[in-house]
Length: 172
Image 1 (cartoon, rainbow, N blue to C red):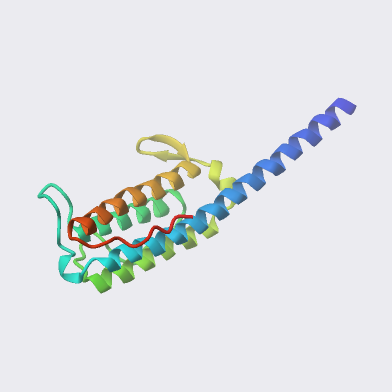
Image 2 (cartoon, rainbow, N blue to C red; image 1 turned 180 degrees about the vertical axis):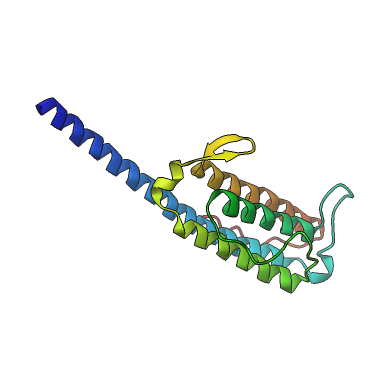
């Protein structure tokens, strides 16, 4: 009986620590996501409106299309894998101005933030059926941030090519 109680206390302690780590991860991620929003908006603001259709080569997406691509991915992942409600803008058919796109970008980041805030720590270990194979929600979050970072860096290169200094990084 004594062994059983010791084992039970150990299991409960590990569960509490694990749950706290998941809560910390989620809180840190939300903070990072909010910084991602501010940095993305700053990068978009730096490009003049008349250069939003700029693309460095024919194979590349334009600054505008690449910005929309970032949003499409995060809305898709949030809606299909994180339990987010529907997003009101149809990003496949729009051709927004710079002002409209920055507003949609802010809305999209806020949509994801609300979705993240509705997640519970235990959801991070939930398996989802992803097209590349099963993975947990934590990996979906990592994928979402990685995708946004990757393509935002491309936008920063577009700025450099146009002779515009990108805004200072806002990471953590």
